[in-house]
Length: 135
Image (tube, rainbow, N blue to C red; front, side, top):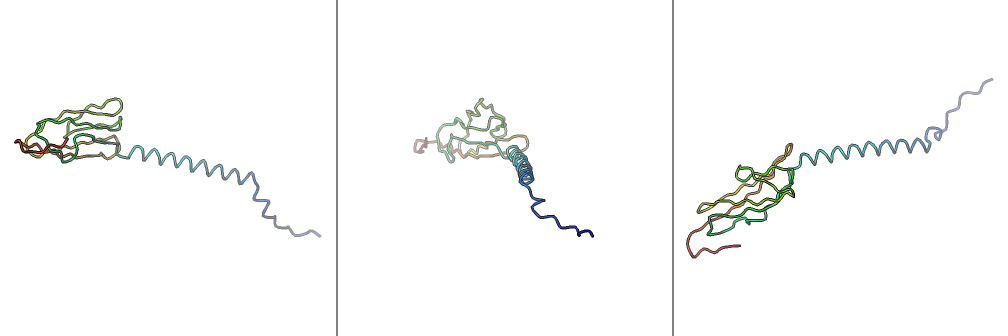
């Protein structure tokens, strides 16, 4: 008479090499997904933009000011809608003509698939000898 088939022990299905294979495959998949997310964020994040001069709410009696700052080297920078040149390291210096009163300067950095990063600077040109000047 034949013995009925016996169930296989659970340990027959779980072997160290199988666990290592599944762990390696999961690690590879998470690594690829992480790299993909990193690239998407790098491409779609607005570019770096800093403006070091003039300060916001700058008060002066001069009718010109030097705009200085730094942007990501691969970005396109505009000042009041006009493109400006970046140095190889991303720095820029741009002389601006101002009118008497409030001048709002719009500095924008953009790259292909990202929203632009925009910074505003307000510069007030006053006339007269009693105006205080911030430098």
